[in-house]
Length: 220
Image (cartoon, one colour):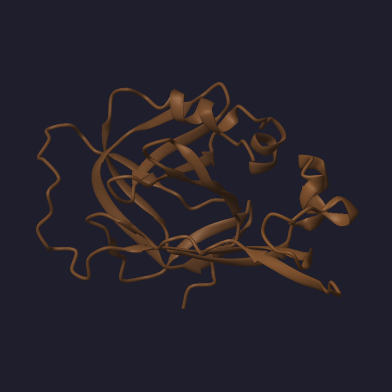
């Protein structure tokens, strides 16, 4: 029997759409500071409610947790007090994400929050990154798929595809919502500068997506 080589590609499934509960789209586009002296107008989502957050004045960053469903949630990390995204990123390591989660204040706060509506679409080949993960049995001459098929299989491309949307949940801002009343003065937070976005799975707190948003203008 003559064996033939089959080249295959793998592809990551798209991420689900994220809807911020009890949120609505502001009627006018708002300014987003892409640089200290440059702004663009972007669609913004507004929501008022109880959120976990922390304002870390040592690291000069604000972190806020936004629930998207019973499980999934977002962490938004925005520089404050003159800090920059580059400074935050330069100090990140393997433990940073867990430190963000653990550092959230145990006391939630009523917040009037505005943040950009987002649509993230990216597709790229990550095969060059895989050798550093020591998965030689899946790559090159050492690839072994004999338990899957008698045909000689080689991995041609490993395509990572990201397709994520963050959008409002209600069309009418005057619709009833289930946010409990509070006498506390709300904290005004507008995410209108470059920030880091982390999409997380709530049960295991696994990190599904980590990225930076510096120019959120791809929503029509």
